[in-house]
Amino acid sequence: EKGTYPHYMLKEIDEQPLVIRKIIQAYQNEKDELVVVDDIVKSMKEADRIYIVACGTSYHAGLVGKQFIENMAEIPVEVHVASEFSYNMPLLSAKPLFIFLSQSGETADSRAVLVRIKEMEHRALTITNVPGSTLSREADYTMLLHAGPEIAVASTKAYTAQIAVLAILANVTAKSRGMNLALDLVHELGIIANAMEVLCDTKEEFEKMASEFLPFTRNCFFIGRSLDYFVCLEGALKLKEISYIQAEGFAGGELKHGTIALIEDGTPVIALATQENVNWSIRGNVKEVAARGANTCIISMKGLETEEDRFLLPKVNQLLTPLISVIPLQLIAYYASLHRGCDVDKPRNLAKSVTVE
Ligand code: M6R
Image (cartoon, rainbow, N blue to C red; front, side):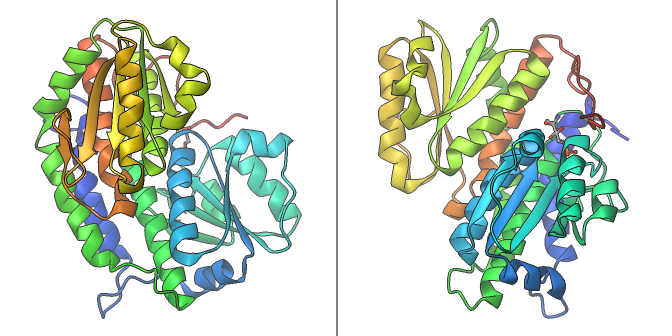
């Protein structure tokens, strides 16, 4: 039930700190360490390459997951859009492990890939919010998101839950491989949950941004580099899906290869700057679009800010920033949709779970 909330989406955005805490609890053992079923960790360690397969928002979570698994556990990862993988299968490695990311566990495009790779006798792990769902039943292993039912068509808490569970999976695998790249994730995720709360308590800021940047625009661009780029893809999907504004996420460095031609006087460009190693280059990109008339808005992380920034995110671990940088983008999309009088929870032409290929 949505209780006093006007929309499920807003309720689900607000539930994110709680979901992170639930995930920590669900994956903790009696010694307060995060653990994953032995067979899953064994399969991760045996794999020479991991293939993450998903659609939409879950695909965007997969892009972040790749970074975690490669950085922490040092296993190569490919991320594929399920509907493309089905018809254009890449050459597989000798010992692949497949990870299916799906909030509903019922997405037909992902299932089609699962059926194919099971015929080929490869191993599969499904990460889903729905125990007993088709993708969970048909895979060898399941990890649950513990996000509670997600009703709004636009996925929010399932995205952050997927990222948190992928971080746990990557971290536990890294530890079990004896890597010193593993994080104290109980501590780091605790910081994330608190930071999420701060952001959820700052909604007016994001409502203001939506009214300032998006009231009459026909398009909007999100730019970022590295992990921020992946979050930009998700921010753009949220905005287009529920406000019908044509929105795109771009890698900062790609702008000059074509996209910058789209910038006109007043075009809104929202930039994320949470990654130290690309902080100056993304700011350079913001200058380039501003010089061509863009209406720019920088959301950065504490410690990396400059005077021009519009909003500062609380400081969290560099690798885990997508868990919090997505929240302003979810809220901006929510308020843009609301202000334009769109149906926030049930956008046109879309279904919550897509059970046809
Ligand atoms: O249930 P799934 O995670 O498999 O769903 C995948 C996509 O259909 C879903 O994420 C979709 O993109 C959302 N409506 C985005 O908000």
